[in-house]
Length: 214
Length: 309
Image 1 (tube, rainbow over the protein chains, first blue to last red):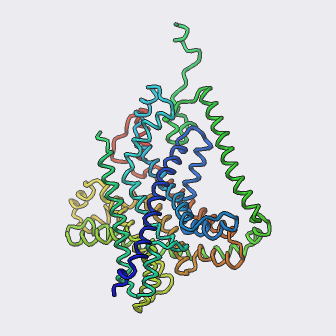
Image 2 (image 1 turned 90 degrees about the vertical axis):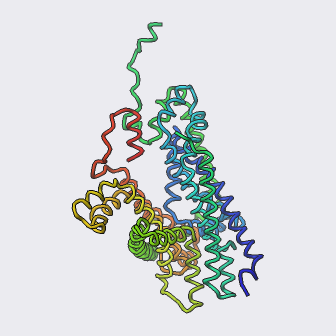
Image 3 (image 1 turned 30 degrees about the vertical axis):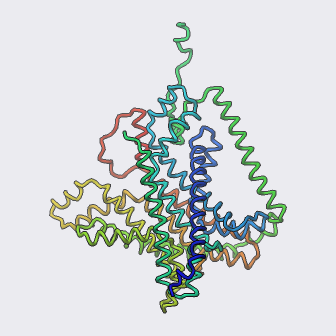
C-alpha cells in the first residue's frame, strides 16, 4: 500500500541519523566556529593567519569534495573512522567556517566603547573577550547562526552521496522499490522543511530570550 | 610626583597607523602591547607554531608511513595531460555554474518582484516557492530527477539534471538577496522616478533595480561562489565537471589522495579568486557617496565607517 508506512521502521531510523548528524555537527561547529573567531581577533599573528586560512579554505572548497576526500581517500593514508562519524567530523569543520564568519560579523557590531570601557576597567584581553565581547557578539548573530544551522541540516543530505544511510538515501532506496517518486520525495522534502522550520523557530525563540534592549 | 607627570617621550599615538589597523579587531581590541604583552605574544606565537608544526608533522608522517608521499605517486601531476583532463572538467563546472547563474538570476529577479508585488496572491505564491526551495536539500531534488522522474517517463539530459535542481535552489537565494537590495534603497528613489512620469515598471527597471543590484553585488558574487561549489553535485549525476573528472581520474590512476588534493587546489584557486573579488567589491569605495552625512573623524566614527563599508 503506502510505501512510506510499510518502511516506517527504516525511515525513522534514517531520520534519526539525519537528526543525529545535524545536532552533533551543529553543536560542534558552533563551538569550533567561536574558537576560530577568537583566534581571528587575537593579538597573536600566527593564530590570526591560521584562522583566516581555515575560514577561506572551507568557504571555497565544496563539501562534497571534502567528503569524498575524507571517506574514500584518507583511508589510503591509514586514517579510517566509521562512516557516520567521518561525515559528522567533515560537516563540523566545514560549517564551523561559516559559523566563524557569522560570529566575526557579530564581533564587528560590538561598539568600540564597550571594549574601551572594559579595558578602562582593567579587564585583561581574555576577560574582556569572555565577559564583554563574545556574549554580545553571540547575541547579535543568533539569526545568522540559525541560517547556518539550516544550511547544515540541508547539507547532511550530501552524506548520502558517500554512503551514509540517512533520510535522503533511505527515501531513494524506498523509491527504487516502490516507484512512487512524487509521493516519496515530497514527503522527504516535507520532513526537511519541518527540520528547517524547527531550527528557525528555535533561533527566533533564543533571540527573543537573549536580545539586548538598547 | 611631578617628574612622572612630565613624559620623557611623547605619548604613543592611538594605534591608527596603517600598520596597526591591518585587521579590524586589532585596531581597537588592544593597545600597543608593552614589554610584558610583547613577551606574551611571542610565547603565544611560539606555542601555536609548535602546535601547528606538530599537527602538520603528524599528518605528513602518517602519509609517509603509508607511502603516500612517494614521488611516483605525485609524478603524474607534473604532466600537462593530467591537468588538461581536469581543466576540461573545470570548463564543465563553469558552464553549469554560468547557466545556473543566468537562469537563477532571472528567476530570482522575477521572484523578488513577485515577493513585493501589490497582489497578495502573487506575493503568497512567490513566498511559498522561496520557502520551499530554500529548505529542501538540492541532493533530494537531484535524486528525484535522477531516479524518480525516469520512472514517470521524464528523462532530462545529464546537464539539466544538474542545472534544474540547482536553479530551483539558487533562484530562491538570489530572490532574497535582490529583495533585500530593493528594500534597502531609499523610498525617495522610486517616488522621484514616478513623479518624473515613469510608469511603475519603468521606475523599477531603470531606477530601482540597477541601484539595488549594485548595492548587493558582493552578496551576489558570494552566492555565485556557493553555487559554483554546488555544481560539484554533478559528481552524482555523472555530468562531466571537475569533481566527476577527478573521481574518474582517481579510479583510473589508483591515486586517490593526490587526485583529490589536486581537485581541491583547483576549486580553491577558482573560488578563492572569486571570493577575493567579492570582498574587494565590498571594501572598495562606493561609486556614489552614500546619503548619510560625512561623520566627524572620531575614533568611534572610523569604527562605524568600517562596519558599514
